[in-house]
Length: 606
Image (cartoon, rainbow, N blue to C red; front, side):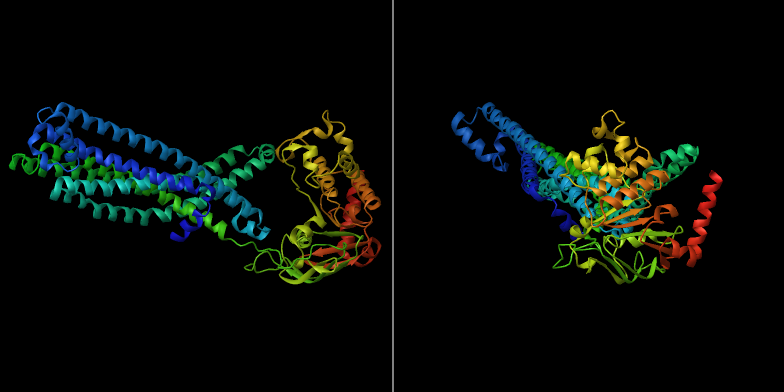
């Protein structure tokens, strides 16, 4: 736990002063509050018996000074001064408490901001393997729910968690000063409280650990449902999805209920301690007051002890609340630290190469699996050489690892065995930004972001001119439909590109990638949503306009790759055959079968 706290405290950053001032101001607030009952009690004692001046501890110097000034028989001015001191102490306590609250809010909100930014930036550095480990929904939960829990705990730690122990300690000290042996009754409750908190913690923590994992699944279900809303509605599966969500939500509720039932023991135990103290003070205090005739223990001492008893009990109640919050947030803190401690599996080398000379690609006996724990290789013994400027088609059945193959080129994943060379250099020796700037990938399910078409296109090149935007869109056959929009290139794209069709989205993504002017262009089934005529026009434009760029086309349609210089047939993660269209028709049964089925399919459609 100390290691976790130390790690998270580094995110306080520029809010350290606020984080320090808040507990200091709270300390001053507590000191003011702890003096009020003592002075009030001595005021009562003085009013009852002005002759007991020697029994007073805190107000004796003030009363003596006042008696010299106004006389020994005139007690009204003395009472007025003591009342004024009480008012001043109350106002100072209020002022210190208010400023402590302001600094606490700034510190806790700033801490949460820094923590979210740190987690977000950390996740941005993750490789696909790291993201696969946590899952998207889990990262979202950690950035939202978990950070909020830790923020609330931090806010309590720098204010309430400082106030309550100090109030508890100062009140007990003052109780011993004022009440003497009577104050020992306060010490009795400490072992009871400590035992309760330890037992509650041991029972509740495993439940919280389990419930946050279920939170991840719940968020994953929501994310999946929202993203696939059109599919849900088209298959009329709203009731099924509602039931699935309700079941997951009920599961989370049940776990939280179990944890809350355990934590609920804090309240009754605190109440028991409170009433035990009150009864003890009333019983023993009244007996001492009566038996001594007010000499050993007077009404002033009695009222002061009662006031400190209430302060001690309130501080114990606050400790209980803090304990509940920190118990829940400790698991959140651990989950956040898991992300912070995670090392990206793909890093820059010590002396990276910062220039990609050309688009040559070589797969040298490459094998790859998604994690070290995986039993099966996704790719096995891949040997492939591609010259700069060539057009390469990759085709194969579903699950043949076509996408896995091309993701090794820009180091989205690292090879398990062998090596991938780009421009004659092992991709692991390149500066990652340099390599990925030289490799443009257009995925089948590429994403458009909220903003105008221009803003989306400039993801490829933030400094691109309007003329360059139009040129790239003409190459990808996107300009023709953009010109139909009333706002043209200033048309606003909704989140996820929901207001454009699948084919339009793909063409915009191709244009965006072309603006990078990459040395290697990879189209991962990225024309699947456009018609064959548009597909042919895009390929023709790229062949004519970017002849020196290496083009890799993954496709399901033979027509998309039949003009390629090289066609690679993948089957179960292995290269089955390499050749051009004509040679593969003669030598590859898989290619011939795909070609024949598509030709027949096209004929039947006609």
